Length: 158
Figure (tube, one colour):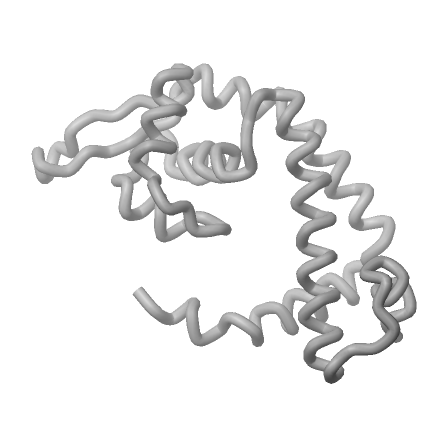
């Protein structure tokens, strides 16, 4: 095990099996992120912007307040407000005061944002198919189980 990783990192040995596994996970995550980023670049989106739009599509037409969007992000973003500002400036999302609490701002995806997601989807599907050719359903389930074991304690935190 680890021969491909050894070549990739130009390293002959690892401190431990856990060290090797973590490095493999980081390299694999970087590879998947690069594939996603390339597909999204063609549409003028970053990964986190795409993630926000997908979150809001799932809440359409009601939307979510900023803190709910932040909690649902795949990767934590340091300034969700500024991220939403940029999406709003592009006409991809809109904000309005919540009916139940006027102090709360709710962000909703716009028709333009939904249309952009429709245009992006074929490229993201192609990335998914390319990864599925390398990772069968059984291995994908096992990989998910192993990854969840690494962050399970964090998932229960508010």
